[in-house]
Length: 118
Length: 106
Image 1 (cartoon, helix red, strand yellow):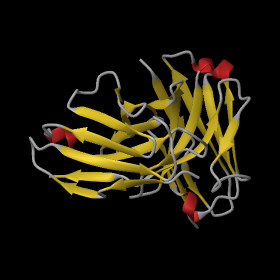
Image 2: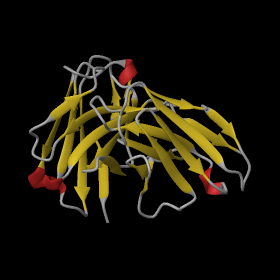
Image 3: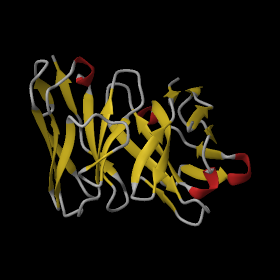
């Protein structure tokens, strides 16, 4: 069974940093591209970042470019999102998402809540 | 960036109804469109990919059509478990974008 489990969310002050992790299991993690998608409270979905299977290609949404860094460790079946200079508008549930080759997002984690507030 | 406009934003329907949701792209995206269902407090669930291909395990009352800039999601014979919010997503170009969502209410 494919599972994606996020961790690392919590309350952080504006300007602070946080590192999210996502542990994948039940599939060959190193063969899949991965993404982070977020959803602010009561709002729609926003794609945040993409990383290819080998980490050779990375993309970011303009809203996080220069502040967030996506990475992965295929040996540990893990995906990461390092977030710096956090703002109130970064408050959201962050989902780890597997990308199938077609392409489409076929498996989502349960999400981890990041709250940026003083 | 490619903008996706979903309509309507809200839709009231009854069990057994057939409902249609439209997603319009600001530029052509071929068939690189997916549809997701999201229930409160849950992660989105993939329904349709490549505009019209039903994801494994999704009931056949869900169907998708379209290409280029105009796409539709149709739910035939609406069931109680279908009351949720639906999102379209383009995967033609980065940054990937989602539509604003359509909430289907009783």
